Length: 163
Image (cartoon, rainbow, N blue to C red; front, side):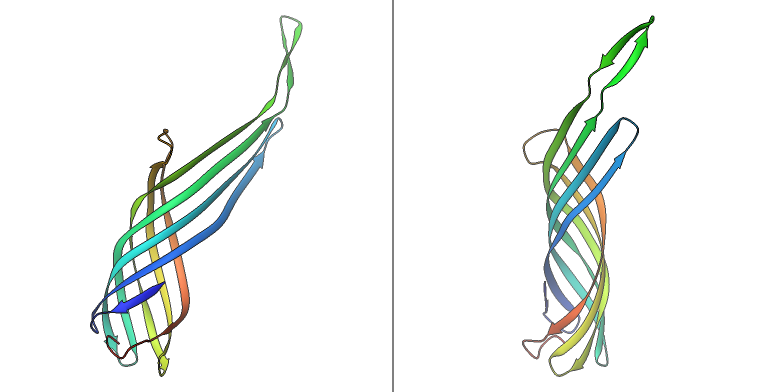
């Protein structure tokens, strides 16, 4: 991402995050499943900061846009049941569900940057985001989730303004 301070107190930030694949799996006596979600999030937010010597404490608020692919595969084993002393086999099988979502959500948080030496700063940031969206193919699936993000890194100042 990149932060641009228009003044020592007001700025803007933009970032891109790829969550990688998040997985979950489970099983019971007669079935097994595995789920996977792969999401990308683009964020644009305003910054309000307060310089304190070589540091700046700031808050942020804005919007995000997400794209996500969610898939689940489930296998059910065959089972024999007895009805009126007659055995019946209930067939098992495999099902796969997959959908893509996209949409706009909110983001807010805050952070601090400390200008260690010259144009280099160390920063930390904490964000809460809402991931909301509909099925990209017009179906019924939706997503309405939240994401918590902690970021730490190094910033390089390209100009002298806005510190």
